[in-house]
Image (cartoon, rainbow, N blue to C red; front, side, top):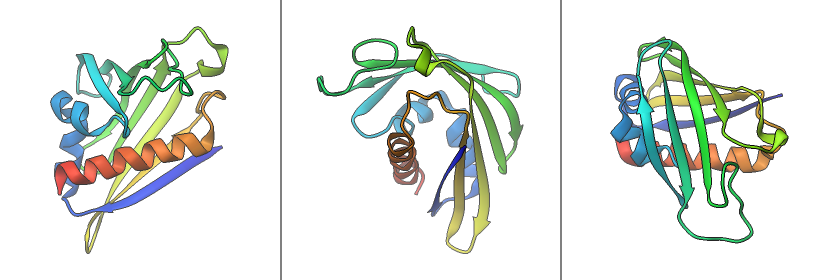
Length: 151
């Protein structure tokens, strides 16, 4: 199944594309609300990749991280970089839980529209441990952060 989430952002495709490839920018906008990011490695080129963690800001006992009690660690690879048009990432979560194993593919498409840029995130092969509803809320939150960061 493919999950698709879109948002029109009042910024150019170039500005949005660049926000995905700068680690300081990624740390500011990518973590969903209630989380912060730590970036351990970042190589922004096709075939390059990154290693980072999203940490839960509040010690909410009802939410457990995939990697540790309050953290989701993951490694990503830039499978395809089509400047100002499309980014394809392959992501593996760091987890002992088999429900979070497997390589998830995120494709982000930047489409110029009259009001700015329509950003569409397609998520394929998400681990079974991630509920579609939670994933949609997380992607929507990240896109709202991206809009606030770039607009």
